[in-house]
Length: 95
Image 1 (spheres, one colour):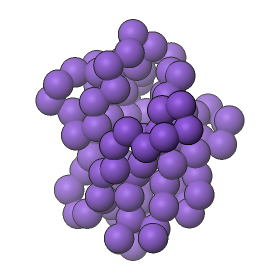
Image 2 (cartoon, one colour):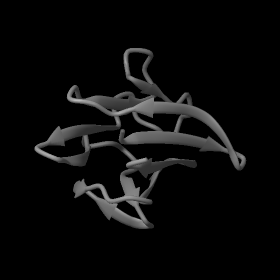
Image 3 (cartoon, helix red, strand yellow):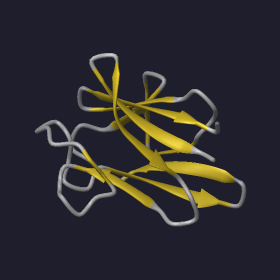
């Protein structure tokens, strides 16, 4: 099953399984993945399933969303992609 893993200081902070429902990422408590840091927007990004693929979208965040060190507006996730929001990293895995 596909997952997003939020990493902090070389350790896993949160593990979020991805299914058919969109996963929201941001600073506000209503998000699926909450990252309480001022560099992360209230509603920063979203991962949605499209067919057999997972797509990450930046939700017009203030500081942007990066995948493998490149800024993105929309990106189809691949095994091992590293997502950066503010100073936090999430890894995408299909395992």
